[in-house]
Length: 247
Image: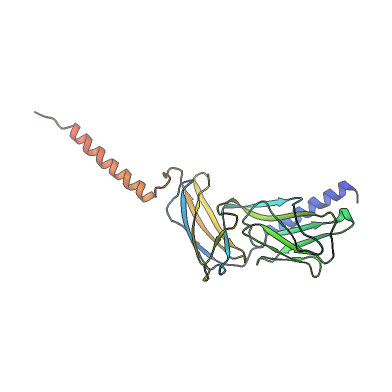
């Protein structure tokens, strides 16, 4: 195939797969609880969750869903695998990940590993399987033939979130599928943002958080209102004393 035609075909394939990933909705259902009062950027926010997998890692994404494509990813592995690598952004929306393995430079084929929404992927050839860790972005794949020594180009399309607010390893759930943790609000402007928690099995919980840059870091809105009220009372008493006329 002519190099230009091959490049064009690869780009079209990536865009097509990316569109497919955007239409997928994962089935796992969890729930998370956030403060109902506005929070300030750089402030620490408590978060708790239920309905997740038992003793699983959970990653938390902040903000809107964002389409992502990683080209020519580093990988390790020999024989029929497993081969493994990691995408550059995490956590990943369950059901949105597609791994493209291109061995055409060595006379091979292009194969696809499609996200099943539960942390596993299915290859486009019978017997080819893989995994995707939604929390850390790590992926694996097993091939149907030995591709040792064949140059392979790996591309991944997936949906991430505007900000990751947990460590790479995420936070762990209890044996009953609950968790309690906190995260730092990213440097964002005023508005209402989605906070999404995802475990390695694809269970997902979403809640909204209001961000207000006027809220002092470390203060709740209730404390801010109380301080404002005290200031008004103090100033009114001060001016009444200053206006007193002595005969």
